[in-house]
Image (cartoon, rainbow, N blue to C red; front, side, top):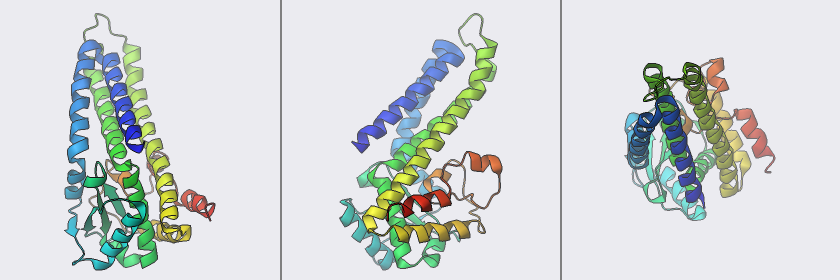
Length: 276
């Protein structure tokens, strides 16, 4: 069922992108949008996981190099009925973690050195359970596709500035201008909403998987506090939604917080409290 929901969302966002191409540049814009969407979805599906791991210089680890981490993940995957994902360590001081991969057999979990140094074993287990919950519900593929389509719509809007109307004899300038601003905003809101809802779902899934909501409450509170004082130089907005805590938490930008892909830590802790 979760896989069906994922493909349905991918299809819906692709159709939105194609419709936008048609509105901006007529049939030629629709064809361009279709080809671009097909290519982006293909790339996002098969290669986005390796791209993000490479971007953060994530190093693979196993039962020999990180036995404690491996045992935690192995125990949780058996409890959740999931295959063992590939494990990675990111050599960053900011405590954080993310999951990636298009399906159960190609999943990966990456944690930073800062997270392993900061959290105790129970809190690490809760964070890993959060990431495994993302994997179980195909959240990372959804997040990657929504981010890709949102960025593509923004680029298409810029295309519309120069080629508005496409093969139409008399392009409607006001419609073109409105779409240029409204559609990228709408795509960003969709991306933000999907990501925030999935974070709440992963928190709840982690609480059920461990049986201890308070472990995740304590963990994300620590992560949030420390992330405010430690930046992640390699972080970029396109992948920020993947992390358990927004890597830009320490940047005090009001608009960035308004369009954050993460709910506030206070909201997450309150929801976890209600599960006790």
